[in-house]
Picture 1: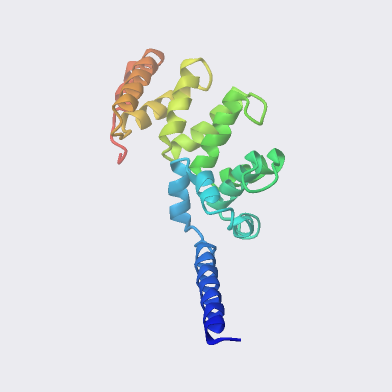
Picture 2: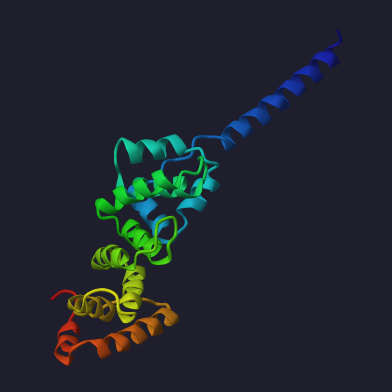
Length: 210
């Protein structure tokens, strides 16, 4: 065989090797999310999109942190993946189970989602009284989305009047740069005032540090 033939063969092998290395780098193991980063993704409702964007490479790690390590944010993520069949076979029963576990550990997003699902009858039976329980817990932990949904339920006649002052207090101290959200909060506060004693309204208008 000629020197030219060997040169061509070596050239082809080098090209294939470079292509293989580039492909290997693309398929390199994706870095596992930290608890804080995952919570940020959850709060922006970008957690499922992130798992898909990472080509579903972290499924086993996510399941282990949810099932074995029982990390609340990962329990929520794994539950949502199961509930909607993202990168895994759809299993709503197990999905809600893991979201409930995250809620039991006090993850606001899990409490808010369970409350919202019970309000709308998503995956579970519609039960607005039960929704109030979840949303109140999430509201107390600072979830503005939960506070707004709780306000809607209170205004529609659900929940206990004893909780109106707390909700008004949270909304009064809510911080948002969204002008539309700011107007919605103000509107709900006005409607709550009609359901509250004037003294309760005055008491509720206190800073969070009190």
